[in-house]
Length: 444
Ligand code: GDP
Image (cartoon, rainbow, N blue to C red; front, side, top):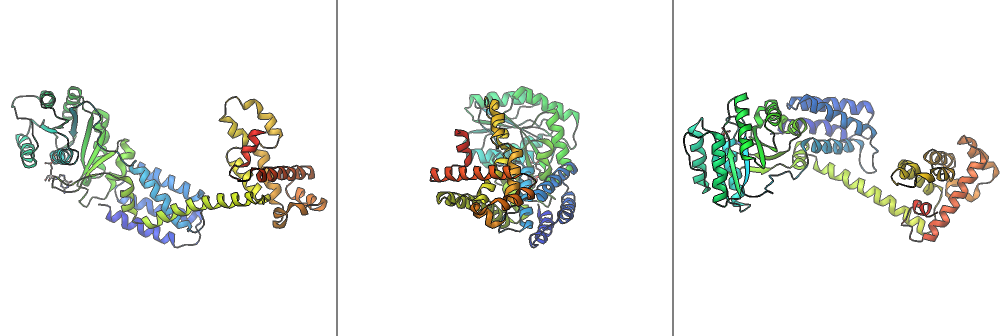
């Protein structure tokens, strides 16, 4: 299904991963190609737009971790956004309700509704060990009722006896009563479809829903119809209300647009996919697996994930080790100040702590406000490497130079050095070095 798209995206991203550096213009050029590939795959325009925008934003702002190329980072971002577009994993049929749980199947004629009803009944019976009753509500096509009865006989799953002259909502009621009397866990209601979306079909579906009060309303949609399937889903959801979507003919050569747009446009999850004509060809929908299949770059994605996890762990371990040895130099302090500034400084942290806001001024005076943090970083930045490693060499002339470089006065440089000494002493005293300087400040 995603062959074409997969090939295109693979090509575009392969070219990126090989490069040592990426400019904003490179990212833009690649995004233009990705956009074209998605549109060619029949993904809805609104979905393409927001997808590209999100990827671009992250790709341009991403900090590249050591041991991966910028292009590899972009692959990871595209992958994650594909997963987000497809929806979360693990959205499956919910049977958590008082039995018999009613599940209503809706959709156009020929979309695979009856086949999917039988597939679902088979899976619930054989895999989930549920007692399932199937009922056809298609009074317009006796052949459709017979089709479900035949499938039921083949699978050894009971179907509701056919009684002519009843309306669909009456049949639904009868099915649920039979379900209750017969001790069934699940009752599957296969409703009638028409060849096009029309009001009659919608109002009938709405009436059945009102009568049967189904726990799930599943739209069965043919993935080969691309955007039409998405529009259908939107219409059904607005008029009848859906709990999920089953995408059929995913085994065919559809371009994938329906699968990629469905979730974003309707907000409803794809719960199952039909992958063949046989009654065992039904699978759960796994966004992460599908995204992996579309990109075909699983190794790059996991490489970036590992690298990102490593880099944080390595950095933390190195700092902890240095603190344990009492080697807390100005580079380490710079790191800690930046971390605090990233959290919005103490004022940012305090916003999250009720009652402490009163202390704000005192804390700002103590030099831990965000702006002050940045100024302190600037002082450290105008020191040489040797000075940062060994602040003891900082005599008057050096301090003057540093103050001028940071646009501040010597007093502020002295304050910073004093703060460093206090922090270093504190680190040493804490021994293990597992707690950051914030712990000490909070106690002060
Ligand atoms: P309904 O009118 O919506 O009930 O559609 P049917 O269940 O009768 O299915 C119409 C045709 O589509 C049948 O020939 C099915 O075998 C076929 N079909 C249904 N689901 C799938 C699928 O996932 N893959 C393929 N290849 N064919 C399917």
